[in-house]
Amino acid sequence: MCGRARCKLRADDIPRACHRSHGPVRTVNMDRFRLLFNASPKSNLLVVRREDVADGGGFLFIV
Image (cartoon, rainbow, N blue to C red; front, side):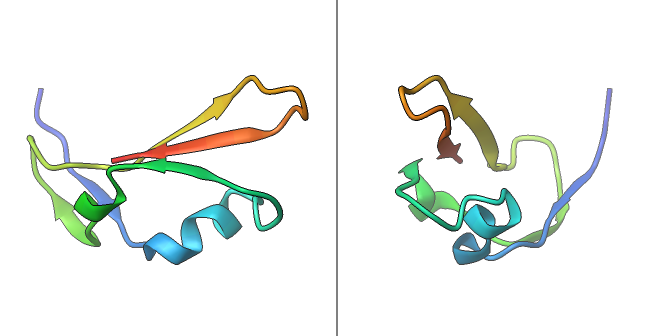
């Protein structure tokens, strides 16, 4: 299967786009994050995952 994707948010805009402008957000490998307007197979793309934490709202951004 071949597909294309686009990631046009800047790294600073990602928490706000996920409605997480308050509180800390944990990130992993954000140095690999690049704006992509035509992501090909094997490109590094952003993954946003909600973690189960005591306050009910932890998010993790992985590239």
